[in-house]
Image (cartoon, rainbow, N blue to C red; front, side, top):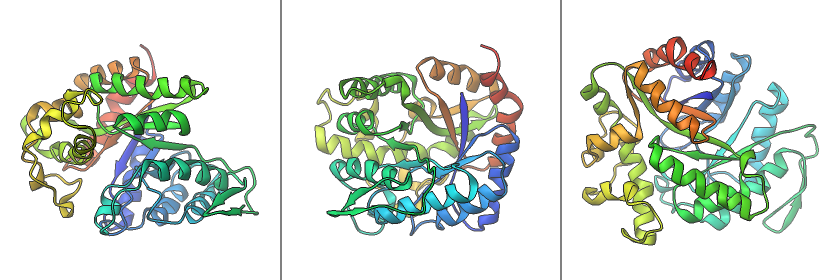
Length: 335
């Protein structure tokens, strides 16, 4: 199993770079950041510094979207980083939540997202693609490689990930839901004539190592609110008891009253008081190292290839070091 670290690009950027360097020293192979231009600093500028100051770490957004930047700009930016540092980027992409809504725009449609996945990958790898009806190719790209991993929750999005993407990003760590969603993605890949086992499966969720579960839950409760934004979209589209989305995912948002993006992804987010302890425990990894190892082994058995640690809490350095000392070794060597 691979491991990634997910951060927000809060200033100073040097702190983000420092944490990523610390993560690489502790065995993390991927460095991810949020991508929301109004709320945080521009991640692609910071990726260049992460790549410069690490040796093997791969970087990318978790996640970008097809509406914030034109597709040829996104592709050229990834390709430039790859040309400078040797194909060490991954394009995590989704419909767009905070990046679009904070700017007063609706998230992108799945049709637009599906088209963008192919166009961005083709352009970044040096092939010709159609952009707004015009054939484009970036002529200076040589031997470019850009895997595109799609974030999804709902049935149509999961199907699209299986049909189009190189990887699937699931932003929660509940084994029941993980199994259900991986199956949906792989079934869609099979139906599309693709090899379902060729898709990389990445689960991303907060991790907090320690014995004080009450404090850990309070530090990670924000995550249930973030996931709740996407779940609310699914409920509005399919209905609460449609059978198309597991009630294990939808039932907890019945008390949700709204969401303030100024606290998005932050410990102490006041918009997440509707999230019960049970959801925090299911969606996140909490407790001593042994509890993390047990849950990660269960996820690995379901086909998860990477666990990406959301470190938006008061113990970022401690969780990076604990994973390096105890958890990553247990999941990368032995049973």
